Image (cartoon, rainbow, N blue to C red):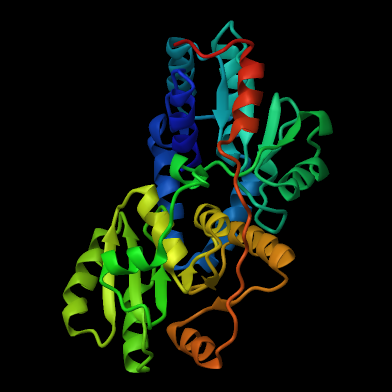
Amino acid sequence: MRAFALRDWWHQEGGECEVFHPLESTFWGYRLGCQFYNLIQKKLPLLHFFYFHFLEYASMHKNASRIIGAKNFAQKIKLSAPDLIVSTHAHLNHGYFELSRLSSEKQSPFVVYCGELADGQGFSRHWINPKNDLFVSPFEEGNLAARMRGMLPGKTLVAGPLLRKPFYRGNHRFDRSEVIKDLGLDPRLPIYLLGTGANGVNHHIPVIKALNQAQIDCQILALCGRNVKTHRLIQKLAPTSRNMVVPFAHIEAQSIIDLLKVATWMLARPGAGLTTEAMVTGCPVIFDLSGGCMPQEKNNLNFWKARAGTILTSSSPAQLIQLIRSDCQVPQLKIPLQTSPHLLLNALLKLGESKPKK
């Protein structure tokens, strides 16, 4: 998500940018590893504790000589001859950094944008390579974590979140009553938003059924993203549901913003992307920890708790019902954005030594 957001901003500046996935594109074994990660996230997040620590100590991508498919990546760098390379993944900052320097005479500046919100059990040591030209984090908590792991203070930058363009339109007119009317909702009933991460991970069906069985009067908006199966199941379930249920497939960023702003609260896993979107829109969040909590998710929970003072979590639909009936206040964070990620863009332009070509 962050890579594609940066691509769009860079294009707006008049430059050329391409998103490339070395792990998925250069060796089938690494692609299977990424797919296994996604499977763990969907089926049993707690299992990722072991997978994460295996990757931490295996250091499969720490040295260029150990990277399988290195020739494919080297060829990509040689043909593209980039003026600047930006990594948004922890495992691309050592061996792939070395390969980028060996593959081209340009010695392109290498920047890491780390989306982790704070330090924690899931802050990978692979994010940190003092040889990289710049380490960028959305908040100071991430930079502190980087410096604790050896990143030079002069090579760190707090640049704010890197999100899709519509999230930066602070002057966008939001009319709650109009959005409620357009969605066909009842302004007298609470609106519960069920969130989905980039990999389509969610527990929408059991949550919707639990809300119906508990006779909780509400309206349910379900983000399904790329999870076509869940979207279809909710469409079949909606006509017989006690509560109004509206499923959404992949929708534009502006629509996501409207839903986050209109929701009474959102139930979602504590992924960095959706958590950040909730913060910049001020949407209260109950964090879904069904199946356990992944190490990286703990970083985001640490950030939320430190900034908001408290967090609410649910590990099952039954526990969610208890939280609703307890009538406890769902915590929220509100972190305003600038009009653009200009701090990051200016830093990249400076490292590139010239403005992007028109």
